[in-house]
Image (cartoon, rainbow, N blue to C red; front, side, top):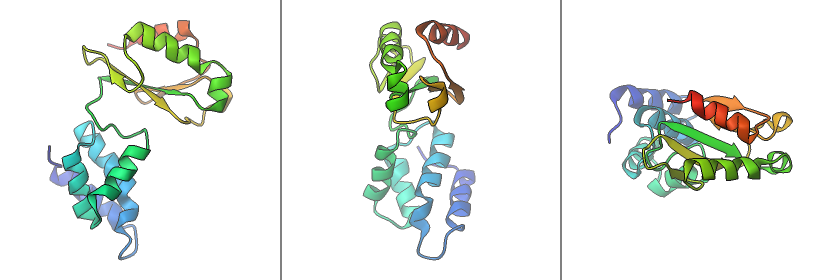
Length: 157
């Protein structure tokens, strides 16, 4: 999996935002650009990013593995990111996770066998006032209940 010239140019644009010698500051932007293009971030792509930023591959991998927004394996067509941080936990995120694992038949960090859904746990979605919350694809869903989750899943192809 190689990055297109368009993606490489976008990464160079991000690098140019930083002073000489500070290209490594563009690592998160480079990972986002790569994931937007490829759908996920492979080891090969991380090596390409490392070369562009003139840093060790492990430095890119450290960032990619720390943040839950980067997919290190191909995700399902629909990504369900459930917040399990304190506000969401106090408002029932465990029951949302339990309902989703039962309904989808997969655990956190797994993709359904049909490739339709990937279920992930995230540390915080900054939606504390609407807890429990999830980011489903690019949509914030707040004040979740098992019934609301079922309604949302029915709308996804």
